[in-house]
Length: 305
Ligand SMILES: [Zn+2]
Image (cartoon, helix red, strand yellow):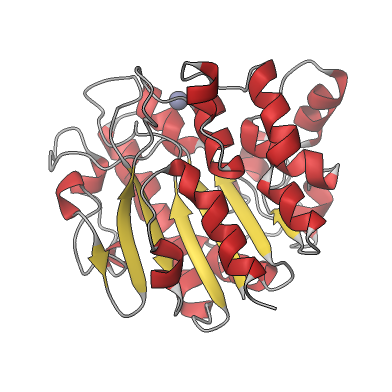
């Protein structure tokens, strides 16, 4: 039994609004194959099929205001209702109280302590890694949850050796913007197949993507549609290579944003949580909110010896 999580920052379940919601118009057959052919919208509700469970998860966690990444990601990866403890949603980076909760309760750490391997499959450029070391910038809650358990992150050599992926799945952005022409060039579908292969080396693997939130803040509808179609191609490669009897794929987020481009701010919407694999219904049992993610992962991985 293993779990591979694909995290997409800032995606919620919104209205069927083709002018403002990329999920209402994108051509994403692989995504829809996991929700009984339906689009990922608020009205889709819970969908169960032979291969997958599609369900909304609450990101507000009984705290007023708009959910944010710092506390939302921490809630996801600790199981602690971090916004409630702090009395507010906070982000994008975690504050000191959130960092302290992550350093005690990180799912990566807890799994490692119980003899399971857990890895963040996203690689980060050398300059960003240097900035973290110097304290010039803070890690996100997801990055910190991995770091407190593993003490290091994947970097450019791991991309070269195909041991990790960029946050954008393929190497196109790094080759173009970081002038790294020697990186292996592969398609989004190949990136999906690589995710399936890499997850075979870990009990718990997690990939973190953030561009969805960026487009929610600053982007256009066509950019949102392009990105979802790109993700759908990654998903296509992954689903084709995935052995449903060997593990679960979980797709989820920290808060809404991209699904409503009529506002530049995060939304109050529930986030999609999609579970793929023969034990998907087991994972989904009782699942209602962000804080249910870490306990469900632990339950699935620890009851399986
Ligand atoms: Zn944001």
